Length: 418
Ligand SMILES: O=P(O)(O)OC[C@H](O)CO
Image (cartoon, rainbow, N blue to C red; front, side):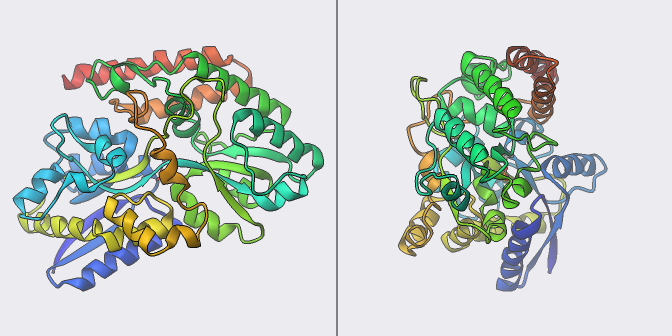
């Protein structure tokens, strides 16, 4: 059998499921053997793959999170575009089979899909119905607006039902980028970067500033607890331990959240919005990752990669992965199969993510984002948010600094890649 290396960033329950999927593929045929290797979180996995490419030791497949897309697209000699790989290896492949929100994020200007969708997510809210009841709130009525988030959080904390109202993962992805799309506000110029390398960030508008200001106020009042490091990595334990009654995090956290919430009743809801902002709620944007194929491996490996991608995208495999993990059903067929199987009826709230990401036809502000060097911009967002929480800057100052520092990196990227 030909071995094919797949570097990925799925730990815990997700990693175990990924290995099971790989094993099933390996046993389904006798020519190829996919070898998955966990390389740490998304940033670590991407950094490892870039270093390996320079040392000519790259894997055939690497999982890259959505914000690495701009950088990967620009690495022309290093990547083997998926549409081309599938054609070269006579594997059937139709971008129209994928959900528009997913396909649109990973296609070039001619509609060619550059990487293979695998685990696309969107952030949702998980909440503790048991704590809601203790606080005198209706467990079946989660907050819809940020005003209700504040009101409910106060009740929760004041009643002693929990010590914090809410926490969140990913200050960058959820409370800045998705906050913008959800309120139909731009993250940057030129359709959030889809329109070209000369796009620039403009995430310091009034809605974003108001929201960061509120997060600071709610943190000071003890209604929100910051779950740093990295803008929210510690949110899950705060939620599992029933310290915080609500948590905004990836839909792809579902498997872990379900597994770790057995001591209380779990609810799912869409992200809150400011109901006085015109156009809100719009639609949320994707996160998660796709699989990129790297150049420089033997032709027989690529033939195997193409076969594996066909397997991974099959309705049965995708529906199973979606239902287990909470990642979106990335193809229409996988979504329909999940409906036919009665999955959403049997699991109330499991369709929250797909309903939210398809809530409205995307606008130029809500299709996603595509900027070079954006992985580093994410670090700047976390740093500036922490500076604001620490009191050294106000929300406007922190977001102005995100824009100024982030745009320097984006300009550098443009100069290197134009
Ligand atoms: O936790 P994931 O896999 O849904 O990814 C979340 C963010 O999109 C990463 O950029």
